[in-house]
Amino acid sequence: MAGRRRLRWLVAATVAWGVLLAGLAWWSVRHDPPTVREQRSLSQAGPVVDGAVGRLVAAVDGEAWELTPAQVRRGCRLTPLADGAALTQGLDVLVAEGSEQALLERVAQRLPADWRAGVRTGSEGPRLRADAGDFITIDGRTVADGRVRLSAMTGCRPADVEYADLLPEHPLGDELAAALRALGRPAPTGADAVVVARCPTGGKARTIRVAAGVGPLAPLRPLGAALVDRPEVYAYWSGPVVVLAVAGGDQLQLAASTGCAG
Image (cartoon, rainbow, N blue to C red):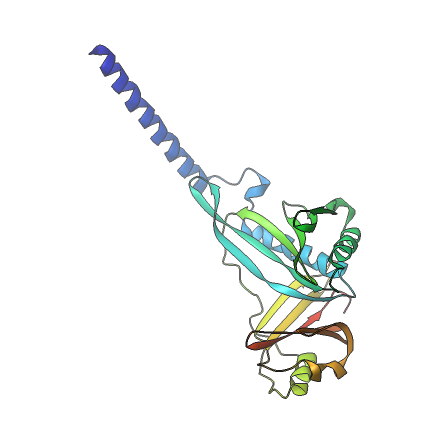
């Protein structure tokens, strides 16, 4: 009997100790300041991501590219008791099919030396990896034939803000207005989406995007020097602006991107 009472006492003490530890962890997560750099919040990581994407834009100067909207993945685990969010932002670059690895290698060479950028080839094809500092990871990979995606990623962070587009409305711009006229489409009063990134030397890189209904790409060909010319994709220079048209589904998507040199 004494042995059983001792066993029940040990079990009860163990359970109480576990509850105490869980309570202390809960209090610490909600009251203690971050003790490691990985726990810097989403709002603190956002400007670093913004600057890193600007570096990527500068590294693809001369290519056909567009900024992609920021994506926030919620529900990642900071600790067993606390959720967080991860921010990813970047750009897509269109190149001739078969030259995706060459593009990744050019980008790696143009990134800052302390990012330690490199390209390795694995079972899924060539992959660029780099470290932009403050625990921001750079990733580059082929996502479709002739399309390379470059991304800056925060990893899981405390989600202290709702990360959203800072410019929900923006004038369409002369380049997209001209493209819509060539397609016989009326120009809307504003863009469907605007994505911006901070350039390394100041200023902003910007992509303005609008839907243009269903139609062929051929009317766009006289508007500027071609960068990419495929049945479903046409990209051209309009002055310093890259205009990209992608036909797919029930919409022709137009994007005008101004880089860090533009």
